[in-house]
Length: 123
Ligand SMILES: [Zn+2]
Image (cartoon, rainbow, N blue to C red; front, side, top):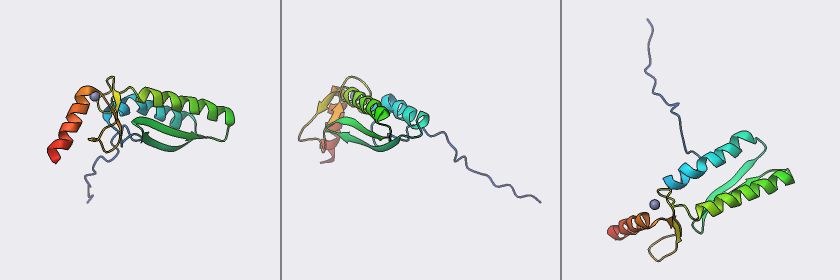
């Protein structure tokens, strides 16, 4: 007799893998950019993806100096765009620095209010 194992579907299509640590606003906007570099340029390493002063900072590394220049420009453009995009919802946002925030975040006003409210309600 055959034994049939009911396999769980583990090969679920995973989206937004690279920017998992960030809000949906940034993920929806910038994930495709990072994915594009990763899939189309095999010689490029992604050194780091981090939030720096409420902006999305991505560091690319490649051996080719010309390509490195282009990637640096690309990363700079992402950084500038992220500085005015709400990390949570993707609307127009501002970089928020304040005593309520553990670290600076780029948020629109409704998301900022919700975020601060959730912090205050935990205290
Ligand atoms: Zn928002």
